[in-house]
Length: 96
Image 1 (cartoon, rainbow, N blue to C red):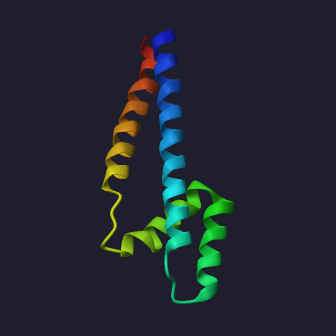
Image 2 (spheres, rainbow, N blue to C red):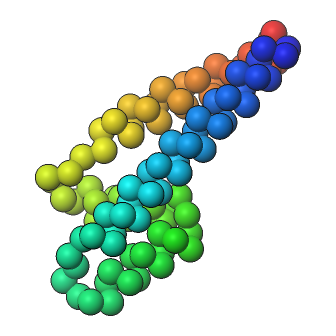
């Protein structure tokens, strides 16, 4: 039971770190990116800062993913691995 709990907490911490890094990447990209309109940059920065990870995900799918020169495949593979790790650790809380 203790091992499952520790495994679960470590999984949550790793997921939090991953989302924080994703948030920083999208924020830096929004700051550096050249938008068509001047206010668009300010709006995206505010969306990312004020809504956190949700705003970063919206920015990723609306702006970042459209740019074919950049990719975050590593993020999605890491998220998949951490999600599987989270499920396994959640199950281990009940069965160990």
